[in-house]
Image (cartoon, rainbow, N blue to C red; front, side, top):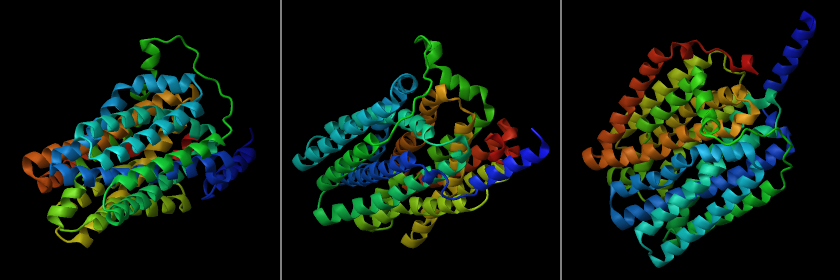
Length: 422
């Protein structure tokens, strides 16, 4: 290809990349994102309801930490199987079945809440929620990237984050208002079930394109293909490891009911605001990234954003002023979004389609470990040393993780524009 043609092609690609609505111009992607937003709204409402109800009934920090553990263990146990299924079977069908199971779990939680069922049964229901998410994550992630061309992957990663954060802004606020208005968590669980059914309806309308699926005979080697791929791509491994350990140590979300009630002395509505604050910051940052030119120095941006995440986590842990706590949570979400967009883009651009399900499953383990196990770690540390030490110590640990990552994988600091890989 001549130099003039190459320059012309590059300019056309740049025009597409700088279109802030590039990914949203595809019908099936729009249906997918709208359904995803609804599902996430219901999930976030349910998270607030579960945290408030369990702490009201038990008064235990460990009970809050157990919420994450009950959901993440099935996800970890089923990772390899769920990823392989997503690469062999109809991804849209897997997603639909998973969403139906989530709706049934929410309905069951509503029944348990209304009848004051045992806490053990609540955790059992959360475990089935983890099973649904184990299959939903790799199938939906792999399906999503089938709906758009490669040259809008970066833009799509930004809107994926935006959609999640939009839901996480609305969901916790609605969850808090729902508890305050209805006087219990029962109605909130039912709304989550309805949101899942709406997601199901929108997903049915998506026209899944035919792709080449994995046809290798089932074996341990095939199941481990996704993990092997991540291990062999050191930049991907560095990015997702950094994100996992940073959020694992620096996450304070699981302890928000304690901070709201015992430290900041506020009620369920303010708890909803606190839950929503990281997502407000994330949403603002995601929209900003969509409208700005692509990051030219993705590596340094990734490292410094995680350092900032650790710093604001420390300040949140020390704060006794509601509005300062709210601001720090918003900043934590904004900084976290930078690493999320970089990681998602890097993973999807470098992953072949027949491995997307298995790689997405591995990636989901990192995400689940950082969020759900992070909640368990925070609950355990808070039970032993108190919530303030748990959060402040986690923030310090996050900064140390960045330093360790830069030493172990020096190439991450040299990572330039992700557009070079598209």
